[in-house]
Length: 174
Image (cartoon, rainbow, N blue to C red; front, side, top):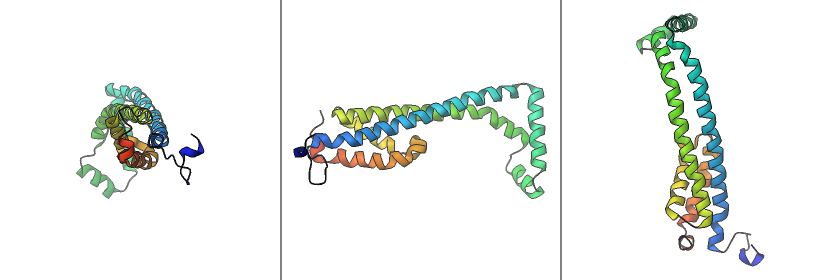
């Protein structure tokens, strides 16, 4: 880009050039989200291995007894409150068995969303698919989907949407 293609603030004056930087930041956000998703999936596999021990009745009983000992360290009113809410050692162990499924579901959701965000950033830079660029920008805004990257996703998603909503930028998309 030459100096003639920039305004007095150093911004791209060509509508096609205005999508490059937000597209790059969408790609970066998607990649960081994807790495987080892989970590969540990895943690889920480790948790699955740990939970396999609970299928053995003897180890399940040991886990329940360990929880009972841990709960005994807390004041009586706290223990009674937990029991009133239904959180007995048996129920907690049962909950632990279901936990890996949540890791896999969440990790899978974040991984798919991050792929869409990366693809949206690429298509935004290529001026290829306006709808996908909008969709990826909105996905980047959702904190539950962008996980720890909401720090990146929210400002870059807003920036991408502002750029994409510009009438002169809309005309550059095929």
